[in-house]
Length: 155
Image (cartoon, rainbow, N blue to C red; front, side):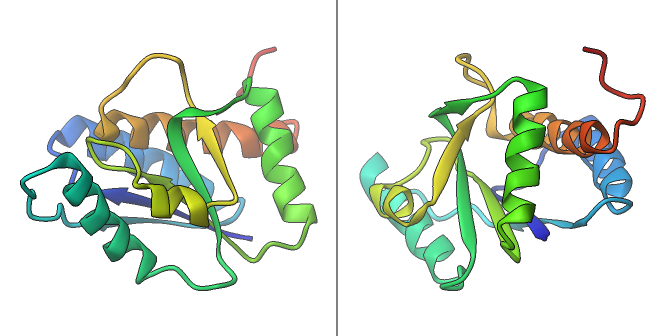
């Protein structure tokens, strides 16, 4: 399974970029993974219109067969071992490409929610969408080490 992490807006902090790259480099030993960053859309007069513009941009890039999972504050929460089982289940289902979408500052438009096959929450707390990239890439790496029974995760 190929995994893509899609995010809206660039990462401003060098330390976050370095951390994200660290885990992306580690992940290549387990699966094909890439990070795709989309430019911020021009702010609209309303939040709803901004979300709609982001959604149109994202939906124009998704293929029919892509499995879309949102990173969303209202999504399903997992412990790390459960998340590992979730990733393994996706692999066993024969899904070829899963996209994990990190929304912009205002979250996801309803049209994106309607297209998604699921949503995941990293926490009940709110994090900047830039930090979520680092947290998620680390958790993805952790999931693969759990699947392989490697010494990284302590349970």
